[in-house]
Length: 78
Image (cartoon, rainbow, N blue to C red; front, side, top):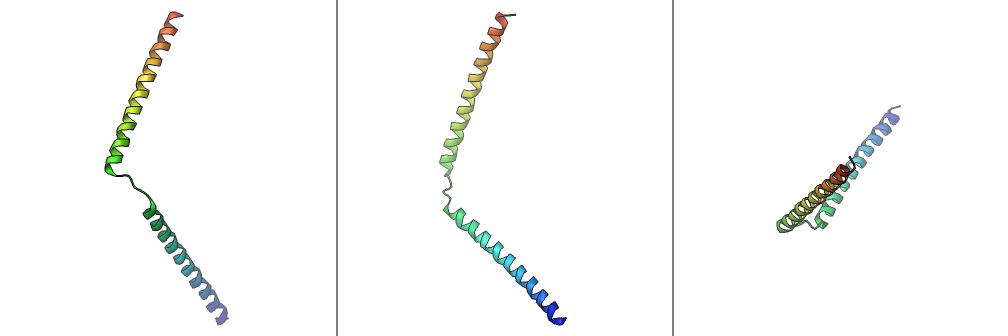
């Protein structure tokens, strides 16, 4: 019976060790992948932000003009 208890403990210890190894390899993999990422520079971030804001403004203007045209057309039929 003591042998069975020891075997169970050994299995638990082995599982815990495997979990630690998996976690360590996972975090090492993440660090490795993050080193491969090409992060944008501050200049690129500013450029992309300005482009996004301009694009949004153009879309707002487009939809406002479209809304006015459709409201005018609707007004003609009322």
